[in-house]
Amino acid sequence: MDLLLADKTVLITGASGGIGRALARAFAAEGCNLLLTGHSQFGGLQSWLKEQALADRALACSADVTDLAQMRAAVAAGRERFERVDICVANAGKWPPPNERLDEMSPQRFEDTLRVNLLGSVWTAKAFMESLAATGPRADGHGAALTFIGSTAGKFGEPGHADYATSKAGLYGLVRTLKTDIARVDPFGRVNMVEPGWTVTEMARPALEQAGVIQRIVRTMPMRQLARAEDIARTVLALSSPAISRHTSGEVITVAGGMDGRTLWGEPDIDEDAIRRRVKGQ
Image (cartoon, rainbow, N blue to C red; front, side, top):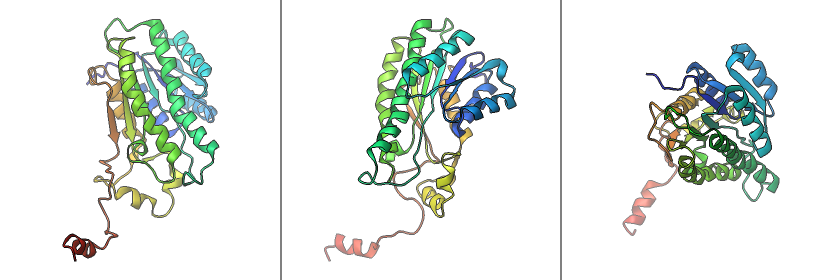
């Protein structure tokens, strides 16, 4: 099926990381022009682009998503190179690995995580929508598409990571507000979110390598396996496609193997007989 993505320009933030890299590969395979941003690992992103021989239709920009001026500059560079930016994936984020209760966590860590994950997504969306307002909608009616990368932590919470869970939960309000705002700039414009669960990436690998972590994670999943970055990228492709998702906006799609908010597998750690006795009034 033709996704109608060929020759469109996509902005992907955090393109030096695992999901960002998978997104870049997926959109490139559909014939898109790539506007990729990186920050702390920007050198690695440049090296990867050279290895992939994508220089003729890719532009890498060093940009800190927490700085609106830098995001505006990156989008401006993309418009200068490709004339317009049609699709945006706000993917850049951070997950500080130490498990710390809120009472143990430093205010600096909490603020830094919100600044990158939530405010960084806001500035990415703002720079993209400003560009869309300047260029106007496409003449072919293929509406602009903006997709945020959330997390199941924003849906279910994550013990020891109140900063991360809060930053991802905030994206819910953003998606459901911008779905209206973008349609006033582009009548066919759409805003959605993909919400991954535990995904095998370099950011998650240190936590996943700890004994017992994977076993604990999959106890909440009917599909007892971890996601791959490609699983997330393919869902974003579908939401960005005017052929598949022309009339889909304001939605959150969870890509987490059916993850639930309760434990589905493993031995119970409660005294069921005691519960039954209490129910019977014994």
